[in-house]
Image (cartoon, rainbow, N blue to C red; front, side, top):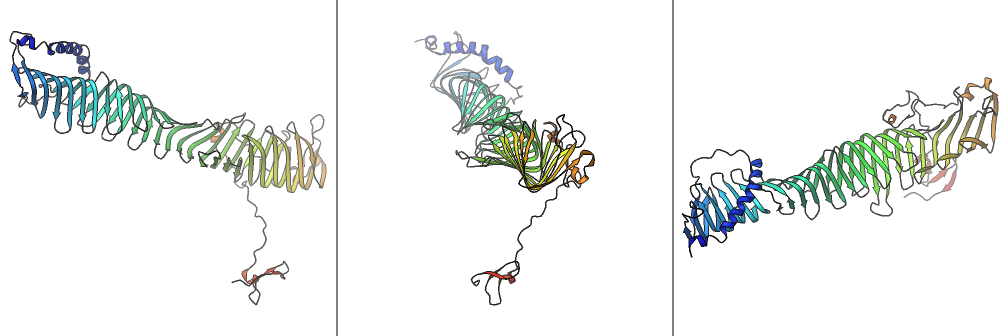
Length: 574
């Protein structure tokens, strides 16, 4: 058989096909991606042929400058060994083409195999095609077309590839891998997944040493029930931690967190948001806005601060509440009996179209549907103001069911613009609501009442002052319909003869200037003027007896009545 017939199978066809593919796809991509070539030393640049079972020439054929090598062919160049079944060796251009079971070994950390390769010794560039596998330490890269630049320790593919390391599988249409830094970049339809998460993105930078992935462009990370959307995010696949920027969003079931910067730990379930944070709870129809937010999805604990605002959309009118800090605790999480307790403290301000309130601190317990306002609480509804030492608000299906004012209770209603006010003061006061409107109030303990009855023409002529131990008032269409008392002492005064003590009760106060005017106004704190703060009254309690008074001369314990005599004898104390 002549040499020409030998070379027909299959090297010539492969070479022609390869040259067409390289011209159309590879060369233009290489030119655009390749760095400027370094100036190499002229010493030891030659490619050495180490072995071939057969060597021949075809001086008058298509490849007159090629050494035709067959059988266990091996080359060496600058520390790398390449073996194959057959090859064309162009000694003058310091290059060769390798066919069949191509394998390049560089040191003990890098191996590159494929069905075909073209190697340029001057450029130190190897182009491998079909069934390509690049193995570098614990990382494997699978593709059909790979160019490996030994000068820059860079390999890149452009017809789809898959990289596998210890726990992760990464696929994309185009990618590059740096064997010296172990950094990689992948583009176009990128997917990174392992047993615990899946990442889809357009551009991904991946460090095979630290196992940190950097997603750029619209990206989605799915881990269990948590879904992250970002355009600039770092994900540590070992520690399962995400650092997200560029206004990223984290969704877990019905809860969603969006922030300029967002940090999430899958193992602990903890998320932290910084700057312009928005937290949404779609199940309970409320939202949280702040500049710092901390949340543990496993325990249900949350902290919001720095311009924190809670927005409750569960009622017919949206409620806005601001405090310096807010904390939420969840109990019996992931059960049917789950309940939460929310603490809001320092400069609490609340605005809803039909109700406003301020206080120093507030606690809301979903188990009892109870909201408690502490320290100088004030609540307004229309032209009515209520205040006391503490205000308890009981909810029913997200609407107010009743209100209980404890200690120095005062209800003030503005009758007209001439500084006439209906006033009720007592030790405690309760208000009951129907369909969101007050229908009945009950005042108990040292009740004082100043009341201006309206004439038929809505004018005022007299005032009624009453003192009693209990007073019940019934409302209709938001107006007083009738009053009930068990026993009352009262006096009617003409409007022009009202005593000062009747016109203004001792603890009268009207804090219209403190009242929130809008949802934006809740961020502007206006406290009571100096000296107007409510001073908590000391409650009377039974006097404690001295131990010496409770033991008689014989060592027997006794109880004393107010006169000092024994009432019940007790056993001798041990």
